[in-house]
Image: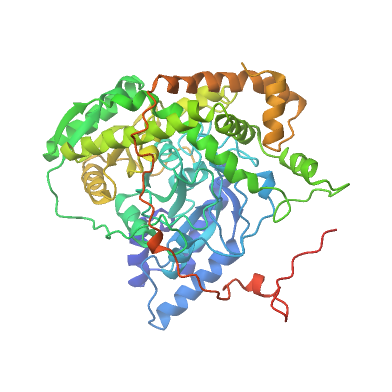
Length: 481
Length: 90
């Protein structure tokens, strides 16, 4: 039998319902696994051992008393530390929020709890979600479970690494420009950025709110669907959220038209491109049609993304004044303007750089030159993609243009770091859903395939991912830990 | 080119103090970023493009009703006369 801590989410629910083990036994096995691997991986910022054990006992009691236990009963979930959890510190991996304990749960957290999920704790990220490696976390970087000398990707690096290392059954991340898909690709797990509006953002601490969505990171497509169905839906607390139909898996398979995005292949490492071609061949074997397409406006996507994300960040992060919430900082001779500036010196370097760029592109004289043009490009790109989706069901390419890299390789050059997001920002700009699915390894380092679909067409993404997952047998647990 | 004075101005309007080290290295780094996004200049200024991705749906706003929050910690601080008591400034 598979070890308890290696079970997938749907196997946990099955095992519990059939009485193969108790929720408490399962949670203890996960806590043991954390004890074993956490000193090497560093996925967690806050671990809520007591909370997890007491939730498990409540589920066991409900099972004994034959009460409804919910669709995610016993499934342990790690939460990216920028999603608000009532009573559990939510730091955004920032000094600025090191003592912040939210008084309410994000809508997604409420959804998970109502369905019997067990919250394990809060996972590491780049400060406020700004970064692609977790090296910008104010705590410490998370290590890639497949090779501890390498970065796990970011910004939801703690989520990607924890799921890959078996420190939780599933995790939640958030994706502003690739922050779910990048660590999913680098850590060989499945991660989805849903259509903008499918999942409520209420309780997600904003970085660039017109771009970001909360989404699941899991070890299988089936687990991902379970999570997605629970967190999706219209929420009165987020006016951009919309109702959506639940996803089914396995589903009656329709033959889909797939297009490989040429520009994403030519910009990639050879090994990565090779894996994507082999995945597209697999799609053809399944009976899908596969063609190549070109996206005219792709060239402008990344500069447009960094303009918009920085502009929104400079506005969203203006609220951190250390008055309403914050960390211990002497009030001294309180003068409002100097106090704010002194306190805000405690943002990390990358956060400061983005706030400054945001202030720059929104300044009079530059607003039309940068911000408005970026907004226009965003609309053009969306129109171009929607036209392509009339002909093709799915657009595919590598999630990341490169393999995971070593710590320190890009940290001193912001542009080098930004360039790794070149394939993922497209989906955030256009508001469309995109998934990263593990498709292979090169020298022991994971490679992910990105699949994109038209808005609210997650069912097609899942159908294709499920079929591909069945024919590509990927090793799930890393050997190195 | 971003000069040290430009950077100080941006820091002032962003309400952020910069360390000596940041004042030293940021101008070059920000220059590179701005140079990178300068490519957006190539795009034509076309006012006919709709900039909104999502249609705003004001008719779907929540009903504007006063109700007590279910936030226990917050409710603890509500005084008898209906005001909310905040923490004292030290």
